[in-house]
Each structure stands twice: as structure tokens, then as C-alpha cells.
Length: 291
Image (cartoon, rainbow, N blue to C red; front, side, top):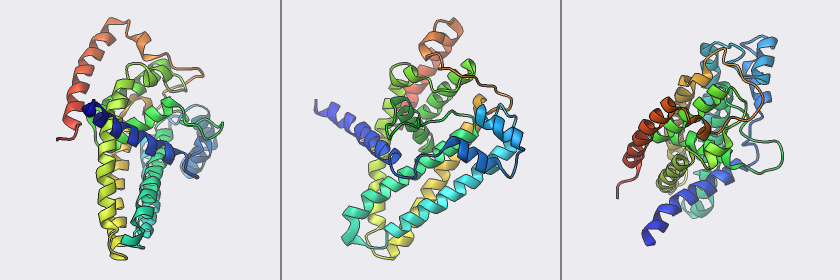
């Protein structure tokens, strides 16, 4: 029982921080506003309108343009999160109990921001509904997997690819709700969340050490954030850009994606899923922290 609790805690810890970060003011990105602003200097009004109504891929926007816009967004968010982290490092050791949790929250909040921006550029649907502060389970699942990609976990890469594949095959605008919350993707989401919970604890400790000395802590803290956030954002960009969902001329239509279990009835997919499941299990074992 003790061991089970130890395994469960990191998952719950990560999910709680992710949920809190997703509810911070200014974290949620309006898809339409962002795409219109980000593409304004590079695309015609017709292309922008189609990118918003369907996807940038359906609008046929060149990959080179999307990559440039993505890099601009990454630089912008990296600059913001590094400056805020440096500011949090100024008070020094006496303020650690207050500054470290706040710094972790804003760091994760900026990870949620860049995840949304990259997702919208590479033809993922709106991740947040407009009604209230609630975050549905499917969105939590996708964000968890995106964070897993940022942290370099191979099982998260595989799971994001599966979700994108479901959406691409069904040509729909919404996340595969059941697959992410009950079906084939859900166990992978839980494994990735548990792994990230452990990594989050290590990162929080590193940030606490970096803030122990006033002023010097500001430089170190800002530098540490820059050194971690930038490559993680680039890692997610590279993965999302490589998926079939991001390929130009991919059309979408209204309606919910058919849940992953439906397509398992086809033998070729079932065989591929079995092979991928074994590979995912192996990847997850490799990623779990060594005791």
C-alpha cells in the first residue's frame, strides 16, 4: 500500500499544478485572436480566415511560414518567463517559501501558453472552451502529453502522435474525448503525469537553490529558466510540426472525433496498436526515475 501511494502522489501533484497553472490569468490563448495576429504579416486575409475557420494546414500555409511564426512565439514566451523568473529570484532566501511556488506556477503557466500557440499553428483544435474556468479532462490529458514531449519522454511523443492520427483520420475539429479520458491514450497520460510529477519536484528544488542568494539568485534563476524553457518549447514545436495533422491541405470538419476504440476493429490498426503498446511500455519503463 505504501508503494502504491508513492507512485500515485507524483501524478496527483503534477495534475494539481497543471490545473492551477491553466487557471492563472492570461494563460489561456484565444485561438482566433492569436492566429490572426501571428499570421497577419505573412498571409493574405483569405488564408488567415480559412486558417481560423478550419486550420492553418487546410489553408495551405507553407511550413516555412508556420516555423517562423512558431519561433517568434517561442522567443517571446521565453523572454517573458525568464524575466519573471529572474524577478522572483531577487528577494533571496528569506522569501523562498513565497517565491518558489509562485515561480513554478508562472513557469508552468508559460508552458501552457506556448503549448497552445504551437498547437494552434500546427492545426490542433481549440484546447479550452469559452465557458468558465473549468478545464475538461481531455484538455488536461493533451496538455499532460504536450508537457511530456517538452520533457523528452518517448511515450508522450507516441501518445501525441496517436491523438493526432485519430484527428487526422476522422478529419474533425475536436479532441478525442473518450480515448483521452478512458480509452487507449488514458493509461499513457497517467504514466506521463506520474513521471512529470517527479521531474517537477526536482525542478522546484533546483529553482529553490538558485534563489538562495539575493541578486545573484536572480541571474541564476533567470538563466536556469532560459536554459530549460527554450529547448523544451523547441522540442514540442519540432514534434507537432512533424505530425500528419500539420501537413498543408489537411481539411477539417465539424463534429467529434470517433473514439480510438472504434478504429481498433480494423485488423491492421489493431496489430499496429499492439506493437506500439509494447514499445510505449518499454519507453515508459526507461523514463521512470531510477530509485
